[in-house]
Image 1 (cartoon, one colour):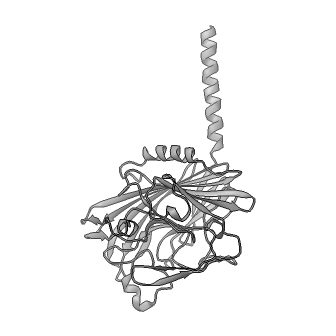
Image 2 (cartoon, helix red, strand yellow; image 1 turned 135 degrees about the vertical axis):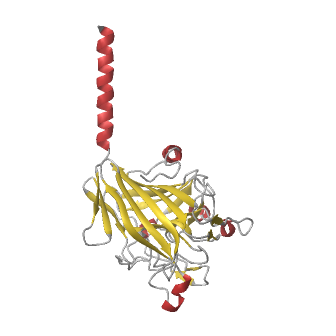
Image 3 (tube, one colour; image 1 turned 30 degrees about the vertical axis):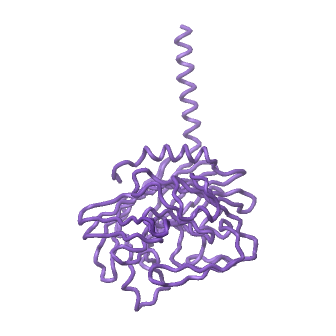
Length: 354
């Protein structure tokens, strides 16, 4: 009888612990707009982000991204400019995935700022189907898109699965993107790619110096230094690189962190071992571009090696990333990130988007 009571007690306690753990997960709602090319994602009853895919944008984006307390952690410009924030690189919008050189076409740098007589050098990603939009403890959004040239010929078909989840002080996005070639496709090694995020002004690294950056078409962009003392961010990678030293180095994960208001805020991106050229190179700039680019090896190694990705017609490649946004008294630790990376490495193997 004592054993029976002990067993019952254990079962009940396990149920209670499981129930408490489940309660920590905030409910997610994924709501497709009836009259706009937009899907809103709510976590814990609060708007977390929106998936935007209007024809006025050259690619689909998640914009803006919010921490659990509602703080916006991505730059507002150009869609919702904030006073005093930088206005460089108008193609940096929220969170996105594309690349600078696909069969010679630049998908990364395309924006309204490109003159019409040069648009033939660029590519577009057009979302044509929302395949799934469902809520629960995890929200799921799956869409189909085409990577096209100016003549609307399809180079790649994209299917992306987002999984959204949250709990107190934390928001998580898992992104799994499969690209299938409709023709012979080459991702030519280039600096600008693959998963990109443009940070809020506060999460930039502070600098008073102007900086200049050149894309593969020779276009020069000047990023102005600042003296407003708002920028206070910093980077750290799984390999221990910090600050500007994170740029061009490899790592399983990279985290940016800083103060926004009274809270510490961080955003971490975690790579997946089944991604091409794992672990990725970090295209993490102090001015606020935070990107994981496994296909920029030539630039990041100063020409010592290169990584060109070739796909024959019908072949595909999958990219998997986890994004973790934290806010509170302290942000996610190195040990916690290593544990998250370990868990992520066992998920999303293969190419199942269902």
